[in-house]
Amino acid sequence: MNDATMTKADLVEEVIRITELPRKESEAIVETIFDSIISALQTGDKIEIRGFGSFRTRQRRGRIGRNPKTGAKVQVPPKRIPFFKPSKELKDFVNTNSAHAAAAPPEPSSQD
Image (cartoon, rainbow, N blue to C red; front, side, top):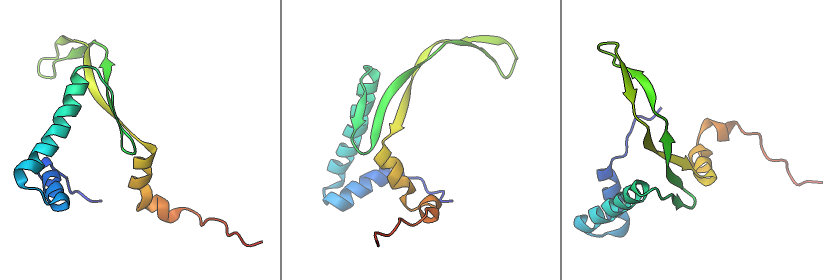
């Protein structure tokens, strides 16, 4: 299993590599994308990126929780949480080079 993590700095480096733009402009591009997604989620909008997936918020109900230190019951208020749903294309891309694809049976030949 690969434990590599791509960071925001890695994304900036990738933008620099592909576009050959200066670092400041590449950082602005990455920041703008993230800021736009966050702003849309804050206002309750849904973000749909074809071929990648969609971001939206889900409402989490309030509940009674427990303080792990004291064991006392605590009221946890309802809140909105961000939710990402990957597209079918993204799921297929992720699984293309995995063991699932290698173990798939060969497609039938078109010989009659």
